[in-house]
Length: 288
Image (cartoon, helix red, strand yellow):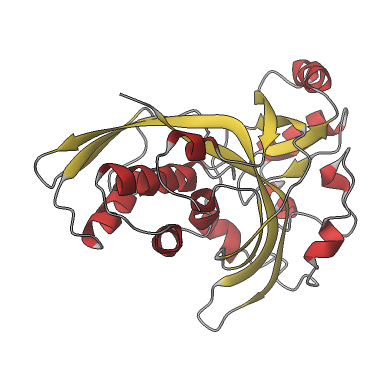
């Protein structure tokens, strides 16, 4: 039985440049994967039932994106088999690191193969978009410049730096973050060619970029303390609309040194940026 990996991600920046008539926010962001991964296993059933056992008990079956992904794929294919999914969570919840979206994407990719659904990558991305804005990029499996509501993907090759990630052990609700009245929704659009000129040594200092959720997140005392802790040693930036923040480092040693100095009240990770998702190497699916 093989384990399927679901990597975390970092938003190297995150802007909102407007809203559609239906209320969805129009985004611009650059997403890079990191080598912090959840592990999933899939045991096929002869009946159509779909179950998921998650190592984090607080995730209900109604909110479990793995179950939703499997049900969606099952409904859109001729497959009548079910599956028991086991998720070993490593990526923290509400951190803005895409753990739930990544798990959903890996579920779609794995079951497309295991159920022999024969869906194309484009079809899977379209299904993923129904589950969440971050799901398509995890299905694409490569670091991307992301626009629209998460469906416009252009592969990019940012430097695969080492990062320190601090999780303040607080879960921020994505819907509340996007609904906040003080959220900046009119950032000037950037061009991808300008982003490609960013510094190789510190991606977070690319001129004219930010994470528009930072000021909102810093209202939470734990997040504000985490910023103050990390900012002593490196330039910190929020990822996604969650509570985790990160800093780019020039080496693993530097990242480990900074991590050791951060306040012990936080969960700290030292990770490597990766531009190709590890789920690609595990899958027999044709990505061409």
